[in-house]
Image (cartoon, rainbow, N blue to C red; front, side):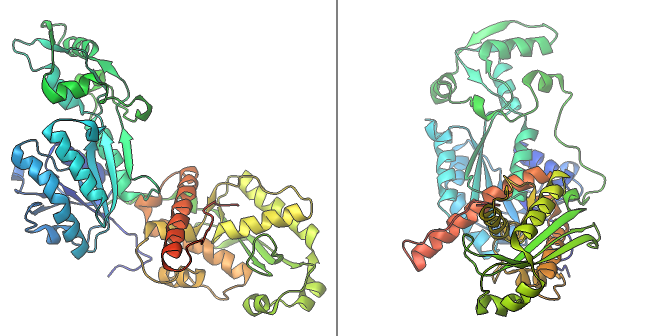
Length: 507
């Protein structure tokens, strides 16, 4: 049985996993060492089945087999498609069925593949896709819609539709084709790595091409053989492509050009030999850890009483450590004493002069960050803001935009957002099997927070094995999203005027 200390190998369920996009999604997920379950109405032929992939048969309209297909999933990617009349009905009807099955299977996260500006298209297919989007976004699921420009294969089918090897010059059309592998990569990332505040994401190919350029590139790939023939695209699709709605230059994302795709020297990720290779979050190898105990909870008025700044290695062992007892210059309230045990008398006898201690603390934190060592602080927005206010109080230059900061409090709520119960340091250490000998001792709390950060890196490598700078940026967004969610809850349930700040890591 898996424990919170074991690596969590996510399971992604791909609806429409045997289609063009679905196969690319499966390949990308496998290459990351993720477990994959491909769901379709019919089982794949044995020759096309991929080692390491689970296959399930389910009907998205009737729901038959769907709950079972979603069991134990961490996320769903819906890559289903259908341009026939029956297929369009599935697009519009299935979201309600999928959401109900997901609820029964205790799955919360879904990523939907869609089309750029699909809500502005007039064709029956585009209307069905737009309705699919709205049905999912209006469901109880945590949904991100990834809108992509047209795949290279779709564009090539238009350009090569003429007989006798001719290349079609699509009249007045501009397109921004994207490799299906690039789209699959973003879909899997959205499923694996929590993001905040993005319910609809738009991605496009690396270049905007006219119909004439597309035809020329296609003809060149055929060694210059065949004529180029101007061809209009009729109907609603033609109006959509001529209007410029199929291009989004500001959302260029893909790495593969149409010419490269035609040359055939690019493709999706290969199926790996070791399917469940686990990525490593290297930022967790060496961490600076930081914690304060103070006189209160108001960041603007509270004073520092004790502080610890230490460095831990990959095995969690302490490499260096500095502790401070500080005379805050004010009476320490009884409530604060009950928390950390430092009385006013003790602080006055054994404590450092506040200004001197704070100079050292700020310099120590700044030095570790300058050396590229990530700083761990549990609920960093409190500790770093208190330190900043104290520095300002004594005329000491405060930290400015400290980074990279690792906040296990923010990360835990992002990667395991549906877990019930408290998220205090004590509760979180218990959940991840981390030892905390003396809660509310700055040294014990700092080191335990570092160990929780390392436990999170081991537990959720597929979400957290990213560059530390990117992880810092994501925490900024997660903190804002979490604060907005908490504020909405408080206003709805308790105080209509409640406000809270989502600024992180320092207010």
